[in-house]
View 1 (cartoon, rainbow, N blue to C red):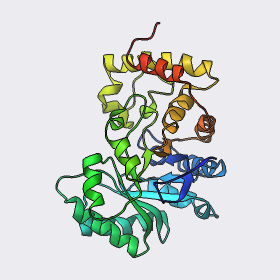
View 2 (cartoon, rainbow, N blue to C red):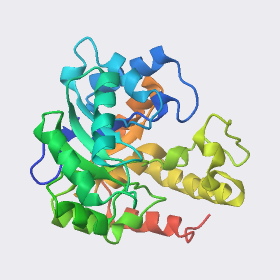
View 3 (cartoon, rainbow, N blue to C red):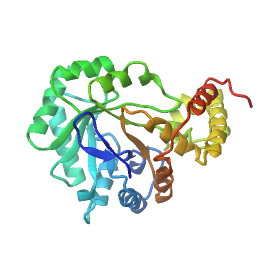
View 4 (cartoon, rainbow, N blue to C red):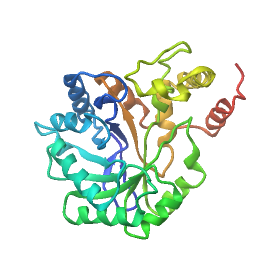
Length: 302
């Protein structure tokens, strides 16, 4: 697996990482044994960056079990504090995560999102104290925009930001990606497959069960869902011409950006994990990138 540096002076990490929201049950039920096998198959395949969070249901407990038998030593383990970001909240969340994961420290601890109730400086100071105490090797943020990252940098150095980024979610290209590149902050791109829209798995009449978070998302409803499926089908044709699956094209399209340190993909099976590997090393011509933009804008020929 190709390695990339996390930020300007961070560690080398696998360019594809495993996002652990699905194995915690966030996208429908999954058997614990299968979840553990999925994590271990990812590590065996070289996908050693593992990302979870306090808010990811049973994910931390499952990861803790998966990382026994020597798998912890082969992984780069990241988790997040979610929702409440006072000093006390952050310290308690870290201790709870360490217990759930069954480890003495994590490799990366992240603030899950910006919450205006909690000053960024206060939250960053708490994160830096945890780093000084040896409970995390590195600290980062998640879903921060350029303004919020700038404010966080005034308190201390952090190595990563984890924003949403996909062919269907390109908002960070305007300001956040350039800011990250200029300030040596590694991008850990989450939701690269747009929660399944970029997999060619679904048809317009698909109904998601109540246990699946997508059942309540507007992009998975009605005409919006149908439009996304139509665009995905056109992208799938382009992918096939390159000898790729649609999901491999979607991941490779993100990996082409030098600001991106890692693309985080979720999986609930070993089969899914192995599919992701084909994205590594794929390249795009200028014409192919232009064609992708046309498809996304609805300008491509049927």
